[in-house]
Every structure is written in C-alpha cells, then in structure tokens.
Image (cartoon, rainbow, N blue to C red; front, side):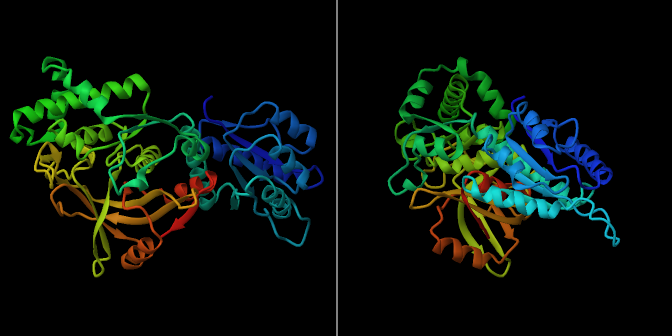
Length: 445
C-alpha cells in the first residue's frame, strides 16, 4: 500500500462503551467510503497496550486520531513519538444530553491530545468536531485525506528545470535542497540547448506520431509555416522522450529567447500538449509555478491554467489571467477549440491562441517563496467566466469570491510572484490543509 490513512480511536473503558461502539462502527463506515487506503483496528483502542499493538502494524501518511471517549495525553504521546505524518484530530459530539451520564467526554480528551500535539514538532494539525453522519465532518475528513495524498505523492515527484530563468525572473528559481526539504520533491536540471539539440537530430518520419497527435488537438495548425510545424513536432518528441527516460512528473521550461533565436520555433505548444496529457509544464523556467500546477493537477485530475494577472475590472469584480500561448489544449472553449496562432511578441508560431472554458468554481493558487526562504500558499476562490480570449495568447477571466481590487492591492503589496495557476475546481480547503502539512504559511484572499 503506497499511501495509508490510519484511523486511531483512543479512549478508556470507564465510559459508556455501547455508545462508543456505535460511533466506532459509524466512523469506520464513513472512512471506508472516503478512501480505499484506510487501515483500522479490530476494536476500539481502550488501553495503551492495545494502542501500541496497533501502532506496530501501521505506516501511516495521515493519522485520524479520534477520541472515541476521553483519553489522557499519554495516548497521543505514544502516537506522536512514533510518527511524524500529518494528523487530523476528531472530536465526537456527545450522543445525548439528558441529565444523565456523560457518555463519551470526547471533547475533554481532544484538549488533552491537542496539548500534546502542539508540543511536538511545529504543532500543526487539522481538527474537526462532530459525529460521523454530519456533512461538515465528511467534508473535513475528505479534504484532509486528499491533501495528505498529495503530500505523500510529492515524495515520489521528480521535477525538471529545463534551462534557467531569464534575467529579472529569478522568483522562479529553485534550489534542489529547498524543494527536497520542504516538499520532498527531487529536482533535476538540464540545459535548454540539450533538448534543442535532441530535437534537431530527428527527421520528419520519426516525428509523424507527434504531429498526428497535435493535429487531433489543434485548430488552424495548417496556417503555420511548414518548417515551424515540423520543428514543433521534433521539439515535442524531444520533450516526451526526455520526460519518459527520466521519470519526470512536472517541469519548468525556459522559453524566450532561446527557442526563438536558437531553434526558430517556440516551445509554447509543446507545453500545452504536455499539460493536456497530465504533465504539469510551466514556462519562463518557473519551478515553483510548475510545482503549483502539479498540486492543482493532483487535486482535480485536470489540467490547470498558468499565467500572469494582467487586467482587473473593479466593477465586474474580475481579474484576467493571461500568458503567451501555452495553456493546455483541454482548457479551450468548446466553441473555438484549441486554436493555434503566433507568439504575441515574436510573431512566430505555433503558439496557442484561445480563451479558456468557463467553470463555476475555480481556485487561484501559487506556491510562493518568501525572502527568508520559507514558503507560503496563495489561495483564492472564484468563477471562470464565459469570456472569449482577451488578448493574443491564452486567457481566463476570473470573478473572485472576495473583492478583486482588495485582492490585487493586497497581493501586490505583499510581494507575490507574477505567475499564478487557476485550478478548475474548488480545492481551497485541501490547499489550506496541504499548506499546513508542508509548513507553508496559508494566505487566503
């Protein structure tokens, strides 16, 4: 089992065990409905000996620590001295308030456990109060499981930095040690010229499959000069081979000026197709932008938009996100499809040229690196509006949940990087939890 969620119901035998057993059974049913990766004890863990025996058998990536009844801090301490994975602390609601016996006393147990949790490591943990049948409990548990799944998956992620950031774009540079320490991610670096050199070595016949694949996605590719089309197919094959040979799950790629000056064809559409295929691929060599894309992909199973905030409409309450032309083909509006054009500045193609599809719920996100070397998560909710492309390139217009002007003013003054991702889905809660699980500051807008 590559990912494991451990349900740990702690308590003592001096409370109302019939009530506790009902909550235990309902909790196991709920968790089983939320994940196939759960491990459960055969019975409630009502002694330290029972707890130790269960802990000997598990290797969790997420612990759901539930006070099935009151338990003193020694129970939580036994868990915490063995494991350093994320913890969600779950308090059960009292099943009855009738002037009679206190049946569970779960809340007092939660205070004991939380006091111990705060004493360990950075003291961060998730918390939920309520019975297994309550919707809020289900929502919090599901989000924690999804966030912990992403955190665990980051340990298996190998990223590639293809080329260096251009001058003045240093915000996207990353140290391999920082990525490994903070997120568990392995970073490999390769020069852009190596991929260009590989691409130049292919002949037309070797790239027929890549060209057919692109033609199935792209609208108007036939309007691009033949040499650029063939060179694009060569470059696409070079990237695909490099990704496969090296086990790359996400990449940041240098784009300008090299691919215009040294190759004569932009890399934009290559990145677009990779994103549509599930490989998070950011441009302008922004490693943390690509990491943000990967996280969004993992949480939704869909491609995300990567771009700059370029326009704000205070009356409409919107921010437009745009980039030169590397948005995933799968994000294109259905009425236009994934149209091909030219790069807006260099006037060379193929580059993507379309507006993105509407979506009722989106999340604006960025893994940001602060000047002191620590990390923060930018998180905002919104709606992607049904708008045509706003400028040459690819764009999406987002009506933000909170005041757009306030969000722009605040994020500019707080020095956020100029690249953000727009995730197609509401995953704000999962991102908040993932931020805490990775030690990042959570910044909601």
